[in-house]
Image (cartoon, rainbow, N blue to C red):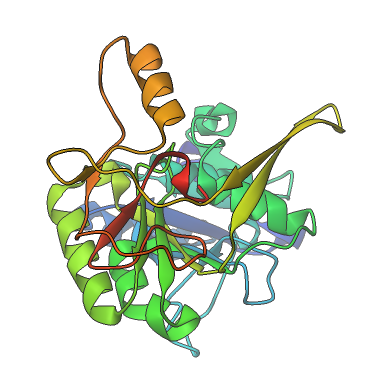
Length: 296
């Protein structure tokens, strides 16, 4: 903010007013309103933006651009990081992934980011949220994806995708935070459990349309060349003696070797039913898609 308080009033693009977005998590601080009130004296406008108002939708015609605003209010303005001259991040907490998404979405060279070190961050660029955006921007067909806070997904995903739908933790791996909801009731129960038991940093999920299939393919691409293709097929989940999904035998062995112990990818589900085919586990109750049995 030192540039805003310099002796010479700053100017925004084309000599206009400097537009500042102050992003924050939790409750706004008292001094935020003072910044908003003082900004016009320095040729600036400050918008207060909650991290929960940042989202993207691969099916809304924006090519997965990260948007800022109330998604459900057609009259509310929708902006991007490029619409601001300064991005000022405060009270980041468990919203580091959102910050990375916003910074990564900047295309203008004159946007100032406070703190500049955030531009160098690449911590979250292997997460599913980044992957889906990269695929969409590259023109690859992807399941329609909505990235937003869990409460917003609970409210909007059913109307957007219908049921069943898939809910995935953006930072999960090996299917450990991938779920299939067959109804709004199941989605409500799932979100309630995740909000209660999940870490704060895991509040961001992606919801996707459910695409029935019997297998999927994973490609290894290095330097623009496809070096290998892995075909993954569906099969009924394996249950341990305690009624817990233990996954594919190869996944169990790999997890044990990786962890140096006998830890297994696992999730409690309802009694198994015959597999119905598609991008999830066997039907019945609230399910967690695990291991190599799912499309993660």
